[in-house]
Length: 163
Image: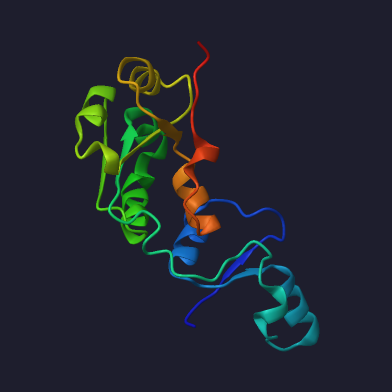
């Protein structure tokens, strides 16, 4: 092990540091480990301090063969972190990561491999994908949630619109 990631004991945050660590299958250790090591005046074994939500497993195929398409709004919200989001997605199996308008997302083929992601139901491209193109769209947070959970369960992140 060349590094560990120290995190608060509270619910795991989806920061780049945390995502990078779990993708690399590096342990997430609570800050209690630092405090206990300091108190013991020794570097303690991390075993008792692994964050309860950390799942040690290979995540390289979570999105195997999938094309992730983000509407323009999430790409804008990621800002300078967009390139890192693309890298994360590819490290967990995505073959391609794209961004653009609803029409661009709808036109990507093969459709059965495309996962469409947007901000929320206020995102105009999400509305167009759902209403105009009858597509299923997920919140942009689905990528990070899937990585942390080490399981592909997109339905919890599905965006629905009131009719």
